[in-house]
Image 1 (cartoon, rainbow, N blue to C red):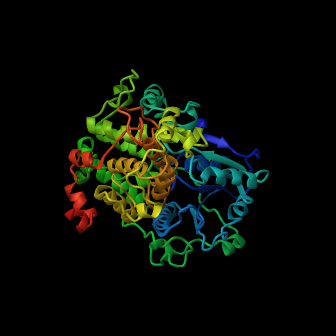
Image 2 (tube, rainbow, N blue to C red; image 1 turned 135 degrees about the vertical axis):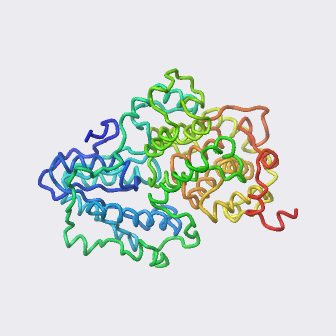
Image 3 (tube, rainbow, N blue to C red; image 1 turned 120 degrees about the vertical axis):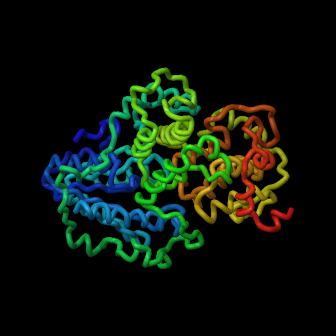
Length: 493
C-alpha cells in the first residue's frame, strides 16, 4: 500500500506516533465514505505501522449552525450505510448522535487518550477549520493529530496562489493536475490488512453510546432533537450508497445530455451530485475514474498544452463539460477557501467589484424585501419565487436559476452587504449542498468573484454582470418547471 501523498497530510500536534495505544482513531468529519478516501487510507496505514486495530468515529452535534431535520437526516442516512459497510469488514465503527447541546463534549479527547494517533478530514470552510484548531489544542501532548485533504483531485496545498479567475485556475490544472492523478485513494482499503478488533472502553460507551439502530434506520424520528424542525427532511436519501447510485445513473442515462441540457430546467440533465459531494458521500476520485472508464480515457491521450480553455480533456464534449464543472469550478472554491480565511467576507470580493457595488449602493431600488419575505418566496417575480420554493421544499435548486436567484437578491436589497448576508443565510439554511466552498463560489460570483467588469454600467449592478427573469424565460426550456413551482395566481398573472 502506497502512503497517502505527503502534500495531503498536515500534522497538527507535535506528539509522536504512539505504539502503546489501543487503536488508531479515524475521526470522520467531512469525508463520509468507507472507500476512495485518503483520510481512511492514512489511518489504515498508521494502524498497520503500529500493528493496532482501526476505530472509526463519526459524531453528529445538535448545535452546528443551521441544524435541522433536513441535514440531520441526510447525515444519519450516511451513518446507516457506514455501519453496514464497516461491519462487513469487521471494522469497529462508532456513530455518535448528540441528544442535547454539549452531550458530546469530551468524547474525542476520551478516545484519543487510548489512541496511537488520530486522523481526521481537512475541510476549508463552515465551522470545521475552527473545530480542528480546537481539537489540536485539546489533543496537544496527548496524541498525534493528522489532518488529511481528501476533497478533490488537486491537493489544496500544492499551490500558495489564490486564483481570481476560473480560466487561470483551469490553465494551472492543465499544467499540474496530471501528476496528481497517479495518486488515488483505495477502492478497497481493507484488502490484505487486518485492522479489525478495536475495543472501546466500557466507561466511554456508557457515557457516549452509539446511535441506536432505530435512529439510523429512520424508525426513530428527530422530533426530540433540539434542532429546526420547520425545515423537513428531503425526499433525497443521504449516504454513500445513494450517492454512488446517483453517479452511476447519471453516467448511464444523463451524461450525453449534460452539455446541452443542464441549463434547461425542463431537460432534467443536471448530475444531482452536489449534495453527495458536499457531505463526502461521493469521492471526486471515484467520479473521475468512472467518467474516464466510460470515455476510454488514458493520460497518454491527454494534450499537454495549457490553454485555459474549457475543452481540454480528451473526451466527448458532454464529459468535458461535466468535468469542467466537477473539477475546475468545484475545486477553484477549495483553492479560495483553503488560502483565504476571509473567503466568506464581503471584503474578499475583487477590488473592482467592491468599487462598483459601493458606487451604486445608494441607487434607488424598485423593490426591497426582507430576509423572511425572500425565504417565503413572497416577491413580485414568479420565476424567482419558483426557484426559492424548489430550494426550501427539496433542498436543491436548479443551477442556472441559482445564478438568477442571487442576482435578483442583489437587486432587491438595500445594500450589497445585505444581499450577501441573505444569500448565505438562505443557501445555508435550506440547501443540501450549502456550507461548502462551492456555495461561496456561486454566491460571490453573483457579486463579481471569478468574473470581470461588464458593460453597459447599470443602476444597482454597476459593472456587475446583469441577469433578468424575462431573458431567462426566453433562453431556457422551463415551462414544466414553472408549472410545478409557481402558484395558480402567479401563473394567471
